Image 1 (tube, helix red, strand yellow):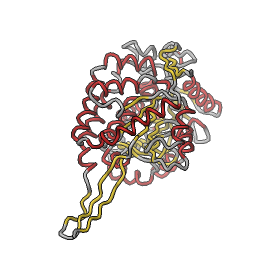
Image 2 (tube, helix red, strand yellow; image 1 turned 180 degrees about the horizontal axis):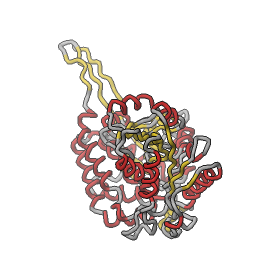
Image 3 (tube, helix red, strand yellow; image 1 turned 90 degrees about the vertical axis):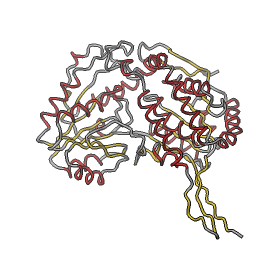
Image 4 (spheres, helix red, strand yellow; image 1 turned 90 degrees about the horizontal axis):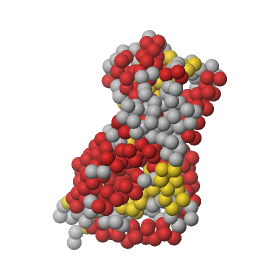
Length: 459
């Protein structure tokens, strides 16, 4: 029997392990999900929304277990309280717009014809969730999928092995039927076989570009719909009229929070030459105030990266950039807890350029590069010189200027004077190798349902 293990970044121990489901057992779970889906969809929308929100409330009651459990699994300090703020914000919003999003589009209602477009659930939705924000990324799809009348099978990354199990436990205890929302422990091979067999009607995957390609390859020829949120290398651009202190505070937080392991974390910053020196100086001071350490310590503000191999990638990118002429500005003496393993100090690099892997490839760690620019045109060219496109953060007092620049940037979301935030009223989407599809907002419901047209001619 294959065991799936979570190796804790806190101390390298095996924090949790579960047996991987066999293909036969997983297929039966999917079959149960499919059998119950029609009955679930026949329930009123109000009933489904209410049950989902009861599940959300039940999970909130588990906060004292969830927060330290997350720290042990992926290293986020307990001082930040888990993911409940975003989890609840997203759940509440999709519940508030479910009726609007799923309402029929009435084209004609006359003596001669009734014409309308209705939205129907896909059926069985497979959610493959990542480890970096395992609750918030999962709820983006789980809540609207269930509200729309789909059943859901969830599979989490090994690094956050217990999250899907806990979510399902909370929702079932709150009254969601057991076969409507199920957690499976699956290895890659079994997941791929299930996908290739056309087991699911829709797949949502959040993870690496390589993982997204594997999902698409497995699904080839099945015509299974999917949403993919993959890699990112999100930029910030600080213009000459920016609020300097606010830009430093927000962008540095966006670059380093959660040890830099954020889907829309800031990984590269372009600063107008008039503010460059001051921005760099203030940023180094800001980052130097972190307290790296055990995430179970309430004084810790920067925990370990989720896995030693993730930290190794960051160190390799930084070392390569320095070897090619970049300069590291944060003093290692301030972070004696950096052990060469999962515990990794934050870093700021200058004298960087786009010939360096550090400025091109996803880093996904607490390290950011800062470049000087002379104009909007130069900044736009650099921001677009990237194979990813999730968000961009523009810093200026001129909204019209930000909107104009935004139209020129290949990205899913344009922020002005903020970053690293997911607004549930706006669709969360990416371009290029960041993926396709979109979650949350009214459009998220549309992606989790299919349109059906009614053209009724009256006798």
